[in-house]
Length: 87
Image 1 (cartoon, rainbow, N blue to C red):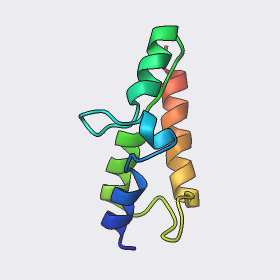
Image 2 (image 1 turned 90 degrees about the vertical axis):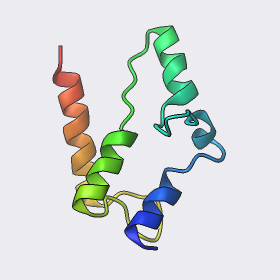
Image 3 (image 1 turned 30 degrees about the vertical axis):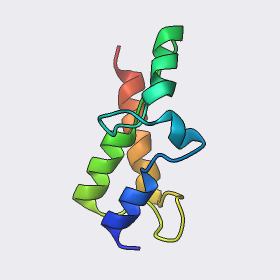
Image 4 (image 1 turned 120 degrees about the vertical axis):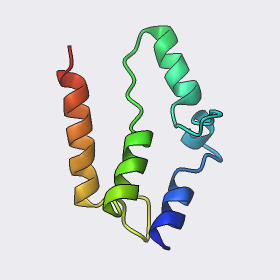
């Protein structure tokens, strides 16, 4: 699959966890994010940042499945570290 098509397929929301991610803006986090906020549980939606990073810098995921490449995991590490480091 081409990068753009693979990205669209990866971030689609049809069932399972994806069904929890359906929000009008297209950003993942919908029901799960709302539930976490209502319960006072911290929630970090990486979807927008990962979409942007993949669009700007190439594939973060392997083309043959939805597992991340090492560069994708490094991006997640940086995003989570920055989030946890913010008071």
